[in-house]
Image (cartoon, rainbow, N blue to C red; front, side):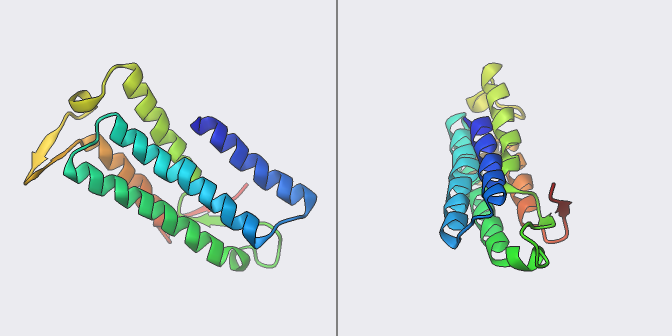
Amino acid sequence: MAPLAFLFDVLDGMIARWRHQHSPLGRELDSLADVISFGVAPATLGFAVGMQGGWDAVALMYFVCCGVSRLARFNVTAEELSQGGEKVAYFEGTPIPTSVVLTAILAFAAFQDRIGDALYGGVWTLGPWNLHPLVLIFVISGSMMISKTLRIPKP
């Protein structure tokens, strides 16, 4: 479903620009759909494939919070970043739909029956909680989303 969500996310933006119609409600609904499809869903999949240790939960929550923060910042600064045009010239931080890559990695791990403690990197006990090192891809992805120094040209 993640690739379909990505396709529909691209299409809704293209259609809105083509029709020259947009609204604050549409922008907020698009962000809500993005948070669910590209934030909550990948984190839930991570939990479902076995990232269930205490440190895993912290990392997955961090990822979702980064996605929400990134979209909120984009919505607030979109007008400024568009420099008077209809379209934003660049993204500050990676766009949240890039989490489709995380979903693909988890799908590949499940395909190879590498779930639970058999996830890539195994499971480590750090203090009172367990950590699956693979969860660090969520931390990296979330950190890249909220980066203000990473600027990606918008096609």
